[in-house]
Image (cartoon, rainbow, N blue to C red; front, side, top):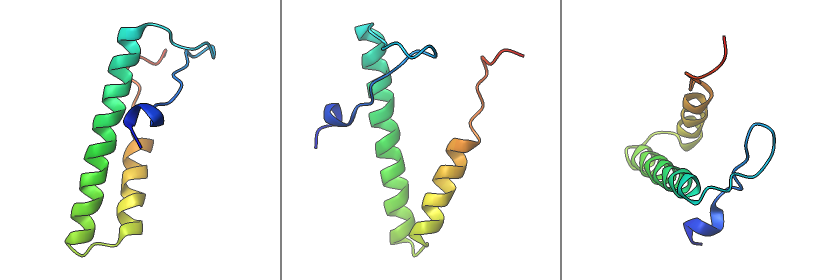
Amino acid sequence: MKDEDQAPRWLTPEGAPVSCLEKLKVLNQNITEIRQVCQDALEDAILMGCDEAQMRQELHRLIDELVNPFAKK
C-alpha cells in the first residue's frame, strides 16, 4: 500500500480540512518518516530478542508523552 493511501485526512482544531497543499505535503512527509522510524525500531527490537508487545507499548508511551509547546496556558 502506498503512503498516500494511508495518509490521514488532516483537520484543523475546528474540524475543517486542511487545504493548503504545502502543509499537506509536509504533514504527509512527516507521517511517512515517523512510520518508517517506528517500523525500523520495532524490527530492531524484535531482532535483538525484545518482546514485541513491550516495544509497541513503549512507542505508545512515547507518543502519549509528547508535549504541545504551543498550548495556551
